[in-house]
Image (cartoon, rainbow, N blue to C red; front, side, top):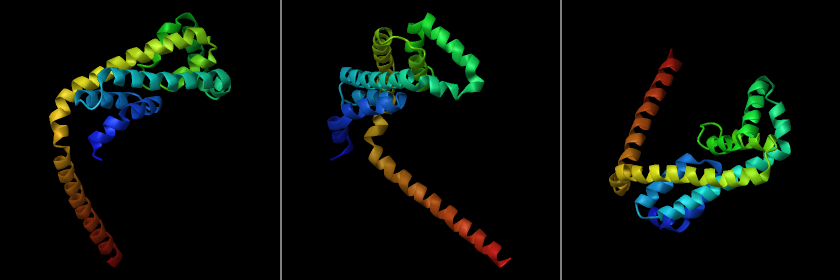
Length: 188
């Protein structure tokens, strides 16, 4: 099987699983695959949104169950955590949807939301809306990016072989140089 066949067969499942753990890169790659015609754009958006929603839902549940204990470990950030929890209670839509777009908040955000005791009837719909919006934006960016890197991807095999040979040559030169220096030091 070639890589295109693997993407066509397992791409949607990989998108769901990958977006649960790490989102932006997987989503962008899904958009590129949709641009290349390997996957369908609407299904990429839905797969990524589903994975992101499930991941955040699980983190929210962990935050609801263990969040208080986890947050107590960050004693020096107590003031910031309190301010964030007040913001969550006053503007849950802003925090739940916005957390998805804040770099570094992908994991801690849903945990804090769960620890703030935001009710599931508020979190779940906001989580769904945020996941869909996020998936649509990043999949679209990947789709547009596919236009730029599409021609290069078609020649990937040729480029990859050249890069591998170049890296092997560089590694060989560096290795021989290191060995010669070490041997020279041992003689001194």
